[in-house]
Image (cartoon, rainbow, N blue to C red):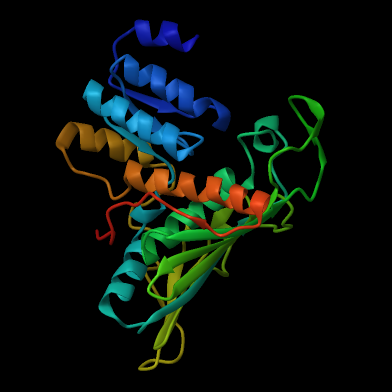
Length: 301
């Protein structure tokens, strides 16, 4: 049914928004206006300003808003965050993260304005790296379209207008920099099946140690850690401990029912939105883009 009919129908508390990326912003606003809490697939909104307006609207209506992804909830993220906080890696220097595959063919929205490889794929790594290293201060990026036309199930041949290839460099302050690489032109037999990926997709480097997340951050398999005290990689946090990447709505429902706050926050989600829009501005202008948003950090379980 049309959302207006759904909102006027049987009463409910929480709207779970799994629509096309381009539709999230206005549907979230409509649901908030009707007094509904929101769990939204990424992104919550298409710009930082629109997202901030959504949070203000929710505050005025007395409802809550959260957005995917939930990668900061995994035990592997928790292990990496606690290792950094302990000082075992020494002074943090740099980090790298990557996620890509050859792109979905079931809907055109991935490749149209408002879509792209950053809000579909890069958003996971951007959330993880800012969660581990702290909010980004500035962005420099290059994006491109590698495959200008695609044959898509719902529309046939389309012209690609959103980036399908991106390299995003982040300045986290205190000398720490990181980069995220994502795209829809990465041949990888495990790109859609995270449980089969066994390489380091996130690597963190410090003056006294380094560590790598094994598998994708949305379905991690463990963390390899080496330090100047134990210089050979050793595997840690190999148990999922109940974490699944689809659990966002259930954690939000638990929060609404019990008051237990999830580790992911709307402010963090909007910071990542600002990073992605800044990356596109950097590509367009050739400039380093300073960021304005932030979120509560560090993220501690």
